[in-house]
Image (cartoon, rainbow, N blue to C red; front, side):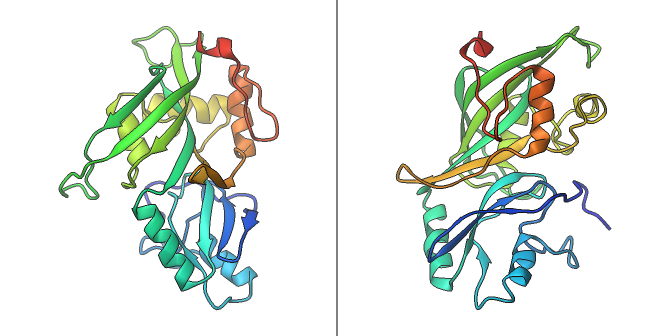
Length: 249
């Protein structure tokens, strides 16, 4: 049985870089980071890459991305590297930058501090997310009967804690859910993008990882995002979009 949220894996994952300690890969949307109890027979990036490397002595995912999220993922080449980099993530020494498309017009920048629980009945723990507006867009069409037009915002997002679905939950808390979010989003908007724009995924991409202002890995947006930018009349070149200043007016 497929999990509740499912995006069909497509394409191949790209190796962005590698060091003595790490493989830096670009995880496509729809792929698991690794096999899970919900999908015990399904291979994730970890299992596929291990097979391609012909069963290396050690290979471990240092962190994870949701199945529906694309972007930079780090895999350790040794247990020592896994322990070191896991410690750096836990101590918030690694800065994670995401790009997302959310419903509505958000403020120029903001901080979301809403405690989140790991499970439905769990105890909420502190969670903090920063964001910055990249572009506002508006469609001259009514998707919700209450509004004559539909407004959206492209944002940069920096989660400063590592809770499950943190970015998705935090923007839903602001009443600006992510486009394509089948758990916390809005069905009318998701259906519009799926049927009209032909974009059926989650509009959330892990664009960059940095440590002490040095870049660890930077992943271009998936080609599927080109449909979003074209639909809104925004430039999209080589997977790294540029936003004109007047798009914030």
